[in-house]
Image 1 (spheres, rainbow, N blue to C red):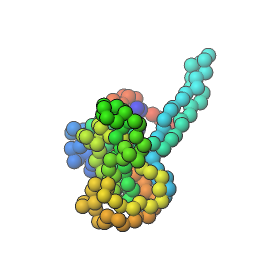
Image 2 (image 1 turned 90 degrees about the horizontal axis):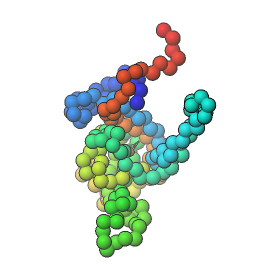
Image 3 (image 1 turned 90 degrees about the vertical axis):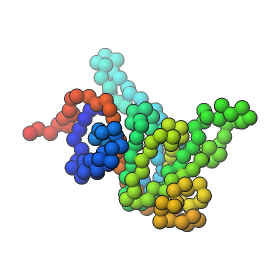
Image 4 (image 1 turned 60 degrees about the vertical axis):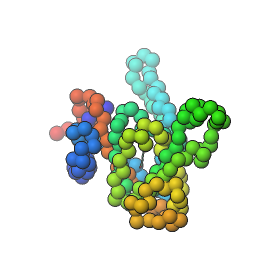
Length: 196
Ligand SMILES: O=C(O)CCC(=O)C(=O)O
Ligand SMILES: [Fe+2]
């Protein structure tokens, strides 16, 4: 990763979250901004392909295939990822990974996504969500492409929220700021063609 300066408004939130000592005394240095319209879920880049000019060795084109699926955030940001939700709530769903089934001797039949769904968390607007420990390491997460959410008993944090079980919440446009620490960054800076 090549470092770039964050816009000052984002640096403010990054500093605030880092002051909670979530990143082992370091300051978070990576922010992913996602916008979800009602009906949209998380799109995950499944395959990133680069096309390289065989003579010069330069990348001439690249493309990613984006699909909707539960995913893990992987080792790059481990052990902590934080998310600020703005504008709308969403439901973040947690799933058992497919490979966890194989250890269970009675049940070698692949389960559907619905059967692997363990719990959801209601992320309210202006809330901070901290993903770490068991939920980071042992579960996949995803956001379903829905226009509204009916809260059921699988929503595990309703006691901490203002919403109630069986309530239906229409989704509005949500912007999420996923703030995390990438420990290894290049020492060089990226100049995007701006002359001083
Ligand atoms: O938008 C969110 O709340 C989660 C996004 C996410 O899981 C990701 O980008 O890896
Ligand atoms: Fe994620």
